[in-house]
Length: 580
Image: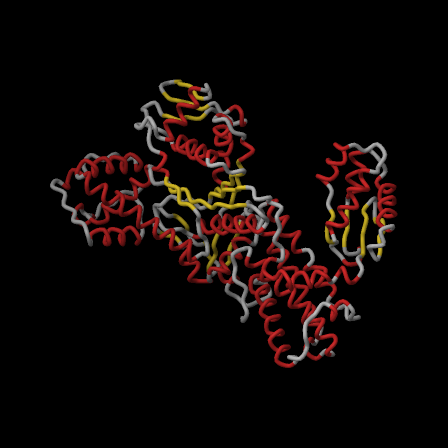
């Protein structure tokens, strides 16, 4: 019915004296017609007269009164009335109001899906944690968020490609390799282990696995730890140089093995977390400055050719003025080495060249200062920075038994994503990661997530779904002769379910809003409110002891509520429960 109302509104706007095509389009872009928050205000409400009055400089209440008359003439609505300073509220005929139940029963899992995305191609790059250790719970929030917005966008008519960017070409991978080799030979070097090496049981396990098919023998192992710098960063860098010089073949084998071990672990954990990627993009595939045909070299050359990059103090810099960055950024250091930024410039050019309509990067909040320089590089290479959307995800603090859990990969003391899944399950973990706006801090209480109390929103929503499933089962056992059809609720005077019918009619708009804003938590808030309405109804009414006429209407309505809850959970990558 919203579409029917909007069609009449469009005709109404063109009839307003003084309106033009441009003003009409401006109004159409801004106004909303939506399900009312409260049934007391009818079923639908629109702010079109408020928006039109602002643009056309007219009286909003007079416009609303004219729209009221226009809609009443159609005889399609039970009631149309002006409210407040210029809102128009609409009450539907009962047949139209309850038709949402029939629509849900027909569409089932497709209820809530739309084509507002118009098949636009969207690429989402998320997680992309350095492959230097297992994913910890801090990475889990970005994983849940990126995967959820991918599912939501797909359900609203977008073509979505999800990508993980593997940072396999940087210094951190060298530190990982050195850590594994040092752990293997640690006893031979008097238990020496540098401060800035990666620690943790996983390093030792990789080393043991490596030794199953490889032998390590250094002829002069003593030189490894001689004359090392006192600075921890310089110390690990020198150790890396020494290990390469001692046996480059062993180094390369250990590097490839360690990297594959970590990546396999990450893929396994993400699969268990119900997160799958369409593409795993390796940073190393961009090539290096040594190759004249690598993507990094071609990107830098284009920037220099177009005078977007320049040389100063022996280094190559990108002019980032176009994005309002606070300073220009180094692409190539004065010693000829490419920066991490240079790889990111080439990577984003690669993404743009693949023809996506929109690029979404899901980054940790600590990368906020990186946005403007990437935008500048996109503009400098000939595209609009508007193609890029960066969604920042704040860190998630995990609490267990009242204590904050550590999450440092370098120290080796951290609660892994796999630990979290084993503790509370994939569905509960995803739910709580998505339960708050992504750019806000999240305190994740493990003890609450495992409880069966009303305060555990995950349990509260799942319990609503399971309760209705149980009611349906009991109904079918005792009323197998009753056939479900729309007439049972359309003609019935039983209206205690109307508040539930009104609430589930909001669901398609909730999904569309979540898609437009890239905010999955909106769906969770909605499911919480819907579940609360159901539990209140259930507690106030003896469903299975109602008359046959009423019980048919009730079960028909509750089945639609169950389907809506199931669809909302599934679009977030969460499995609805049939038993609790």
